[in-house]
Length: 133
Image (cartoon, rainbow, N blue to C red; front, side, top):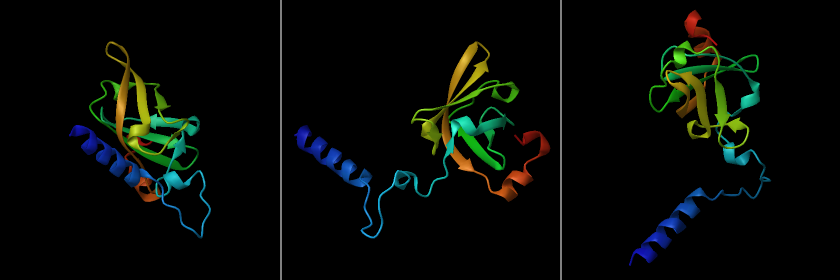
């Protein structure tokens, strides 16, 4: 009895995740990330962490991204260097794409990211001076 239910669930998930094609448009590699603002990890050139659960990244010259951790990442707010590791290649489009590797109280620690969001220019300018990456 479980096999038909499992097959039905897999079928429903596959259908829900399958991309839909617009007949008037050619499919491109960016179709899967449409509506999301992605960045390449190699373009990160600064960061600040106002607390153990929030990280701001400077990407390129003008862009600021906010990352929220799944749980506190101890001493991230004191780190002088950290790494943004993409689990889906070299770009980050959503929280589950990234892991932060930072020094911790007992050595290197990996912190899972819950969400990633590009700040607007107004939001980035409104950050307190100590929180700006």
